Image 1 (cartoon, rainbow, N blue to C red):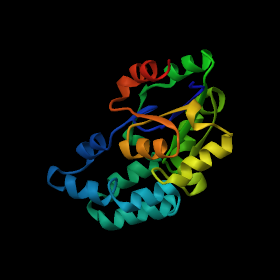
Image 2: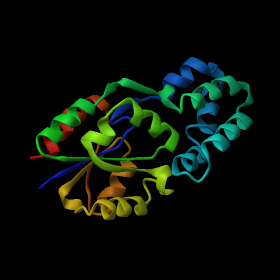
Image 3: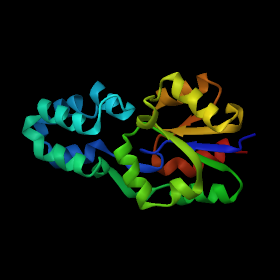
Image 4: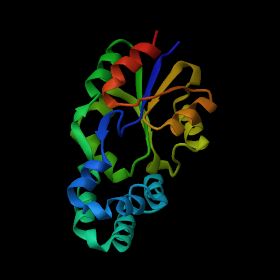
Length: 200
């Protein structure tokens, strides 16, 4: 029986699009290379994980994409929230599920700087959620097994009583491998359906 709903943040709680940013700020001929050198790079994962600091990451991405220094600075000055559509979110839906008696948690790969901006803009993380885990805070990241085990231990949860929702199938499969019920959210608009289908 599901008692706990665990939500990723990007593309689950808030719409997140690297394409919108790239299409706005990067020349068409440079977009594939820019993506590989920034959002799609190992360095981005290391920033999310907290192994490389936010400001050192800014410097690195500028060094590999010097033509786009201004755009990268804009992105980092926003704490990466330029890629988020904060008006397109599932916060109210999860508040409804809290009111139905479910415990709400978050589990996301994200720099601390980005999370603090979001946390200040809504009472959701502090009031609706029992708690959660941000990768950079603990230097662990999805889909590595340790972050899921840490999460379950931190909140003393039984994976069989949890539903984890993530937009990345690798993260979903990793959660399943540690005994957590998990489902891929293919579009942020499908959250209502996913919850209805997986919570009986």
